[in-house]
Amino acid sequence: MSGDFDATIYGKVLRAQPTPIAGLSVWDLPVHGDNRGWFKENWQRNKMVAMGMPDFGPVQNNISFNDAPGTTRGIHAEPWDKFVSVATGRIFGAWVDLRDGPTYGAVFTAELDPSRAVFVPRGVGNAFQTLQPGTAYTYLVNDHYSPDAQYTSISLADETAAIDWPIPLDRAQLSAKDRAHPRLAEITPVAPRKTLVVGAGGQLGRALRMAHAGAARVEFAARADIDLTSGSLVDARRWSDYDTIVNAAAYTAVDAAETPEGRATAWATNVAGTTGLARIATEHGITLIHVSSDYVFDGTATRAYTEDDPVAPLSVYGQTKAAADYVVATVPRHYVVRTSWVIGDGRNFVSTMLSLAERGIDPAVVDDQRGRLTFTADLARAIRYLAESSAPYGVYNVTGAGATTTWADVARSTFALAGHDPSRVTGVSTQDYFAKASGPVAPRPGNSELDLAKITGAGFTPANAAAALADYVKRYVEDRASSGG
Image 1 (tube, rainbow, N blue to C red):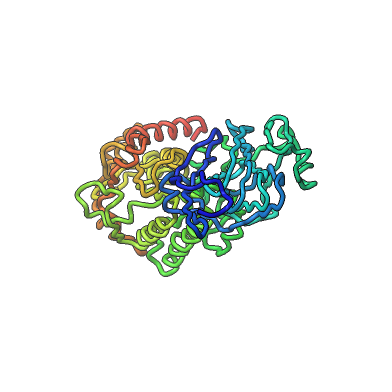
Image 2 (cartoon, rainbow, N blue to C red):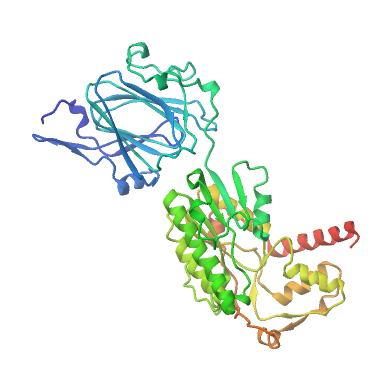
């Protein structure tokens, strides 16, 4: 084999080695040589992702050529991930964790040649010193430079990092800018990427605000801040700063969606708007958490619906939610959270029943639809759990746990819990209930029971629906009493 390289670069197998800095990994690369020179797969997505490398989606390939030994660059932390390797020559690399967290200030060093590379996560300071003439240092990055982004650097001579440079810095070649970087004690640590909740003004959005109370890196956008139908989502944020988007925005006027105007608005919000978020999430490596509905099913099953059952929506609203589910499934990092019979802060079925009970009105309530209530506080808790637990991506059913009921059962329980006679509630069929409706009526699934085995298997325990209803009614009654209502 010809060439000026040490024979030790040949014969390695692809292997990843962890380091004391979280997310920073060293990679042995197979280098194949013969009388013509050598060849290597410098970056091989399928193989490396299978061995644990994040699927970081590089968008740019940079090369730094350094003529003289002792050329030293860094220590720079950028707002992107990068995969660093050597095309020719040899370097001494140094990495310092500049991220806000438990390993802040941790240092790792290693020599790199064409058979060794390093994956450097966002916010970890990167530096190198060339050890041979004519060294070419290459790196793939997964974002483009932006003047609005946070770039953090520390001095190559920082006493806390205490890097033992092979060629002392007083004999190395440094730029004036690198010499002037501040010490570790003088910088602001790199903050983690943020979470954005879209649709934060609705019932679920308000519950998500409470579930993330005190979380500094979570932002909330109501419709006035981000309108999914505006067509300007790309410019709504600097999306590279975000790690997770929770889409709690939706057009939920089920019956109005059956009108020509409502149909157009439902598709614009639930499908076109979600498609815009999905495109952004894919482009920027963001996790997209999307809230779906039992209305994607026709309700004819005689058992609980699983995440793998084929959708068969009956209504326009159900069609838009089913379409959005498939759109979100194209995002590499996604969760589709299917839920049913949602009860939250504000006007809802339970609060309506309580108001009728207080006013002496005896309601007729549908008794041929079955399902479970889902309270927004529990749904928000599940969404946060999925975002933070590293559960496998995909579709998850999330509802209250326990026995299924009908809407009439829920109404009777609500009356009884509030101290009213449950026999005041009369059960009627869906057909009879809507017989005198003045406008379009969307068809409802008769069976809305969603199987919870997958979410419980992922480590989340949904609240019991009956117990959650009792707590809700108790708070309602107490609040009314304290306010004199």
